[in-house]
Image 1: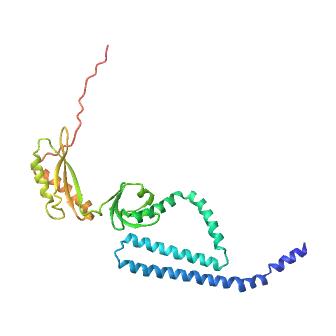
Image 2: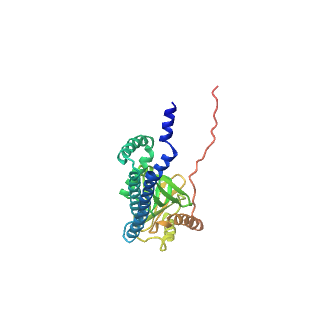
Image 3: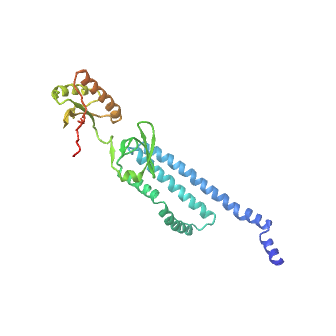
Length: 282
């Protein structure tokens, strides 16, 4: 037993450990640090050059950010593998082990993987790009950034929404930017005895010139005939989609004031309940 302890003490003596650290491990660590540092500087330099080159082309913001992200992660991944190889680690076996572990993690992180794959589809299909005004479900705002996991939208009230990419891929996305004209619809009600042509003239006078387009021409249409009112809709077209929320509020208020000032009745649909006397039999 004493001999075993003595042999272990000789094997793991501080002298041998220090000799191993100084002669073998420290040089490898130094070289590995230099290798990773070189790849780190390379990834920053390549990203800077690629960003400058892409900025001079017609590539949109979304594609530019995607290309830069791919370049960064690719160079850093190669740098990490080269660093491990410099330390004498079998990278082939490590990659195989990571592959097996990746399958296990993949089952546990299905939602995250789904978002990443959906992000690739968004970059490829390009239903919208950074800077577009979009509506996803009940969320409306400007696309600020598209990452591999989520799309970040700044709403009109200043909130930043991180919408999972899988939600976007599986939802109907309304874009307010991809077409030259955007229509504003203002719903109103007028009395059933009102002169429709007079009301039409009043409302169309509000959308002549300014931010409103003459072609397609604005219209006033009757959308429903109810018992106590007529449902009408003022339809006007604009070209600056960034103003459509403010213009909708403004036009609705102007339409109400124009009809009220002209004495146009604007009743709401009502429900009248009449009491009925019920007599008990017998």
